[in-house]
Length: 415
Ligand SMILES: Cc1cc2nc3c(=O)[nH]c(=O)nc-3n(C[C@H](O)[C@H](O)[C@H](O)COP(=O)(O)OP(=O)(O)OC[C@H]3O[C@@H](n4cnc5c(N)ncnc54)[C@H](O)[C@@H]3O)c2cc1C
Image (cartoon, rainbow, N blue to C red):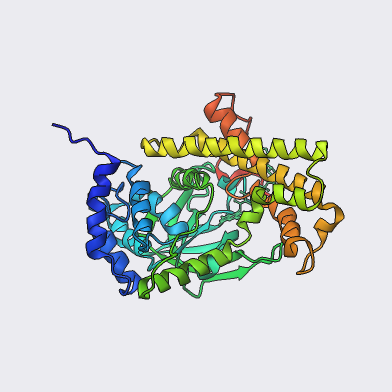
């Protein structure tokens, strides 16, 4: 007889486990090792790979229980969010053995090394090269806009390994050890004065031969998996450690503070819809019909985009692979952010350009205005999301291209 798995059934198993095992005085890594060994860290992963083989929705149910118990959960960042699921899906068993556990315990952190100065939207046009030399790959090239690369242990690196294959077929996906002399991450300063991403220069950087995710030459397929998980990202929640003290919680709070220092401007990037109604009242413009109309439009778009996010969550709960909701949701977030910036500008006028403690909301309004453009770029631009929807969802003809079958070496390239 098939056992029916319910959320209540899962709760009734994980709660007593937490009561028995959660010990805030443990070092954070030791606690996470227990969590991973129990299969409750990512219950939807296969039993062999630190999970319990439960449905995808069980991750959320268990995550809520861990928070409710006041315990520390999975580490934040692109390791557990992007690298882990990609390695689980495409990695060989020895690679999973080597890389997955330290991702889940937080002992090894990750960054994404995809974009290059000449290859962003046209990611498959990248020119960072990796060549096999005995038991190592030797990497030369430059990446850019790499969030958190300055403190990551590993990079999800896509590099060209075959220049005679067409552009999408000569790529390979690597796990690049970041802490070596051949890798230099230089922080970039953004127009909102934050510094969350880097240029990364690789000069004869070394990768052990077997740190290839998927097959050599099949990096494009693997990269698409990472990008699909990235589009699912949506809102970045803050972990709740409101109550309790102890070593594990202190270390988890420290880890979260470091993580969120990088992302401190992301709420502003999303437009800060939460501030709009109060700002309208404070500025005395809440009765202005034009302002009211713009706010009503914004709040309606925001609500509808929340429903799209709910649909994406429901699809995930049903175990469906990332689908069209990712691109639609990402586009919706861009539209909401732009409309929010428009409303903030209507309300603030030229004061919105002022920064510093004496300016509107201590400079938050100005930060919104210069951060919102990033929403339409990160993780694939709006135009690229529209191309994906047109081709993959609506079945429209592909964009005409002349470069899909030509050896990459023979393609005209800038620089
Ligand atoms: C906040 C943030 C975080 C990021 N983090 C990372 C990271 O961690 N790792 C990483 O590797 N990258 C990261 N990126 C980089 C991001 O992925 C790229 O910026 C993005 O893919 C766009 O590439 P590009 O900047 O080279 O723009 P381009 O590709 O040069 O695009 C320029 C313009 O041309 C348009 N365009 C290009 N091609 C087409 C087309 N075929 N059809 C229609 N319009 C087109 C684009 O929509 C855009 O408007 C990050 C970016 C941001 C803003």
